[in-house]
Amino acid sequence: MVEIFPLKSADAAYGKISGMLSTLGDPFTRIISPKEYQSFRIGSDGNLQGVGLFISVEPRTGHLVVLSCVEDSPAARAGIHEGDELIEINGERLDGIDSEAAALKLRGRAGTSVTVKVHSGKDVGRESGIREVNIPRGYIKLSPISRTIIPHRTPDGHLTKTGYVKLSAFSQTAAADMANTIHELESEGAHSYILDLRNNPGGLVKAGLDVAQIWLDGDETLVNAVDREGHTLPINMVDGHAITHDPLVVLVNEGSASASEILAGALHDNGRAILVGHKTFGKGKIQSVTELHDGSALFVTVAKYLSPALHDIDHVGITPDVQCTTDMLSSPKESLLKNKSSVSSLEADSCIMVAEHELDVQESRGTAS
Image 1 (cartoon, rainbow, N blue to C red):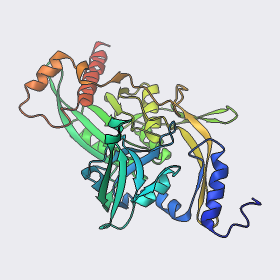
Image 2 (image 1 turned 90 degrees about the horizontal axis):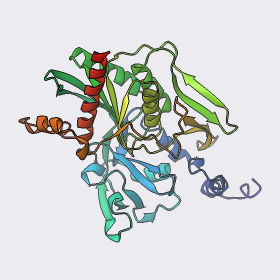
Image 3 (image 1 turned 60 degrees about the horizontal axis):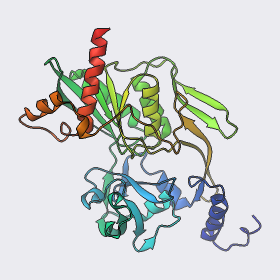
Image 4 (image 1 turned 120 degrees about the vertical axis):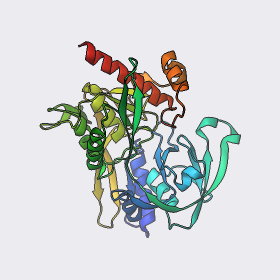
């Protein structure tokens, strides 16, 4: 503090405090400026102006990576993909810059543009994987939920309906939107569900817990909080009533982080859902956020999350029950696909196809019992 008081600018003070916090070895414990904190709170109403990227610091490398792109956003149209590493924004190197500061540089008035240099996640270690892209900014509508009915023919030949729900972020409206969506799909005759959390970077953790309660009954543990002393505090539902008890498969991948991992763990460990996909990102930190008098904010990691079955999430991730690769598809499923006159992009998605197979397995077990 003696070193900070003589500093003549807020930026210098923030820099000094950031240096102090960096000695803790946790990239998520940090101070952000008033402007950055205001930007951090954007998204609760689902609207912003920018390029449509979700980014995060990869804990193992400290690099800024793209978790996902908003569908049909300027970034998606420019060819930015999940897994890409951000190297520069408008010619400025991003070494040591946190995700909020980088997001602030990407945001801006619709109609302006920003130039980013990215390293393709598919070309790690190759100079040819680095490219520069100019992206126009636009109005980004963060609609957290999209859904549809997927016609599904079971192994015994019956045609059923699978409700497909994609949750892209956990905003303040996520749980209410999810409840409305499930009610609609139930009224349309859905007999099973696929909840797609792939490339969902998280958001409000409370929203993740609220969404879990839409699928669960009773007083099950949703997640466990563990403080630095090792004390475990379970967070339980109170008199939960699931909207539907139909079979459920949850899709996850490397871009599923934070609240997505908490939701996936809650549904899996309580026996409500089968997980299909790829190992999740591994971000399970609990943070205390303190707004300071000048509008800046201090984020301090105070605990971490464990799944209901006490599996570590942070830096570990969640391994699904079944991985989805095209070579795992059964031959009857492949022949069914070939016999369809038209196949939508969802029906051609190998993870969706594996999920449908798992739903068939759940249905058959239910019939046998």
